[in-house]
Length: 225
Ligand code: ZN
Image 1 (cartoon, rainbow, N blue to C red):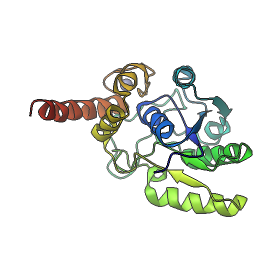
Image 2 (image 1 turned 30 degrees about the vertical axis):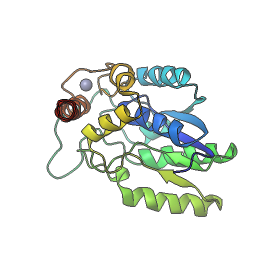
Image 3 (image 1 turned 45 degrees about the vertical axis):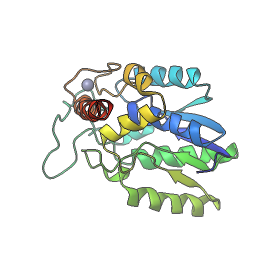
Image 4 (image 1 turned 60 degrees about the vertical axis):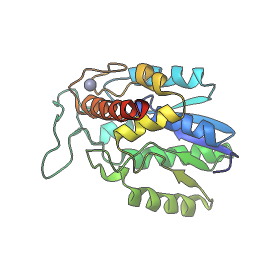
């Protein structure tokens, strides 16, 4: 991909979006980050995101879309009364699913980006993610891309560099981008709000840890060859 133009990254300070931030810095000459609060229990991630963006010299903007949590309290990320599903229920999504979240995030990101003359959007969604959230699927992203173009009569491009990567491959990408240590020690992925390796038992920590172990094993084999 040609290094040109500008990109707006949907950025939360987690492993995935931080990898995307540095992916964008490699591929675009100008990168900005937009971070969302949506009534999530752990607002610490906002501070983590702000610091990482600041250190990476990326302009950072915070948007409050907490209306989303007022509309639906059935998600354990926004409702303190709900215990978090640690496993994926057989017939549905875990209660960490926030209905409509990525549609809202990307729509607001597009409106903001357009106001700055930016038409490339970057999001860290992945189909390989265990939870299978519908708004992380490629079909949804392509559909929304068309809708945004029609809604604003523009030519947005939504980039999803992690779409087909499992967590070990996301670690691999951060290594290729030279930010493996930064992602490992500074990002916040844990649903219980603990930085770096996290609490170790929430679904996000398990996934991150499993991917890391798998990648380190693969890297070790390669290094020893
Ligand atoms: Zn955790």
